[in-house]
Length: 147
Ligand SMILES: [Zn+2]
Image 1 (cartoon, rainbow, N blue to C red):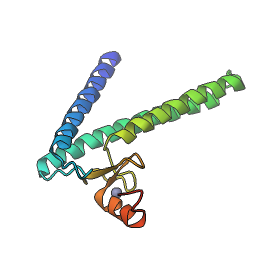
Image 2: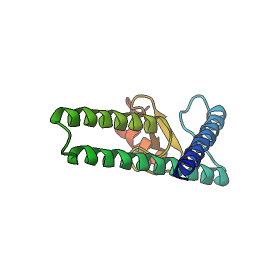
Image 3: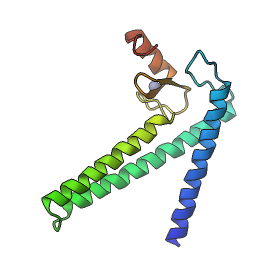
Image 4: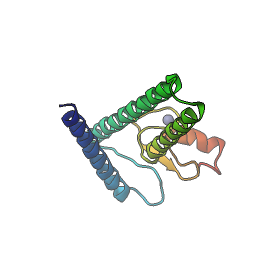
């Protein structure tokens, strides 16, 4: 029963990713080539985007929590040697970095304020998504980094 639940849950996440990638593809095709801003004016589509971003954010947090628990288990396991603990903790750190890299690639939320409803701007110099107000503020302060 648990395996079926995990299978359906992963299937749900998979389809959520597919829908989200499709939605972003539509936006990329419709956006102006001179701007790196993804504008979505239709309120219903904005709500769908917000819901998808929320699902992906929750999935990210869930996986982060699993890695945190793994870390605690390794740290509290008295049967492991120091070298075994270090090796397993390095694996957990690598998984955490991989998870962060994946999250960073997708426009899930603003990297500064965390907003998920706003349109996001991709900055290739910093490899991060920011909402328009945060991006404009950064542009005022560092125009060479945030064109
Ligand atoms: Zn922001």
